Amino acid sequence: VDVVLMDVRMPRMDGIEATAEILARAPAERAPKIIVLTTFDLDEYVVAAIRAGASGFLLKDAQPEDLLGAIRTVHRGDAVIAPSATRRLLERVVSAPDPQEKDTSVLAPLTEREREVLTLMGRGFSNREIGAELFVAEATVKTHVGRVLAKVGARDRVQAVIIAFETGLVAAGTE
Image (tube, rainbow, N blue to C red; front, top):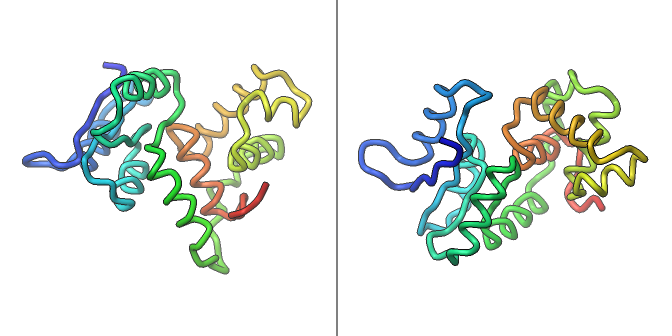
């Protein structure tokens, strides 16, 4: 199975728990990508789904072509979040209080170059844009991104970017 479409509300176990369970049991190299689908446009579900390891979060009223595009995007290794949820998550990050003490230990294994790549990912740069900024080939950027994901324990770019913000590597409003 490459991509799983998961509902949030199910009998016996909710979709967030099921996502975490599936990903915990699957070998990392064979773990499916999971897109959480729901009728409930709640920030708590989005954050919980991402923390559980989901690679996507969409509302059930998404157009068929958008759903198909999301499946393809997640299958390629990228992440997708419903536009309404993305906007609110960004507002939440910007308005969140800035704690004085941030745990940056997750960043310790990163090389200086990998930190640069993660910083640019957090600023919203694509692989091509990161390559142009750092004067390296896009294939080199993809290698760095893969190493960043592995070293910080992120399944995809979305989780890595959250880590970049949570550790203070990237500050809200940074361009």
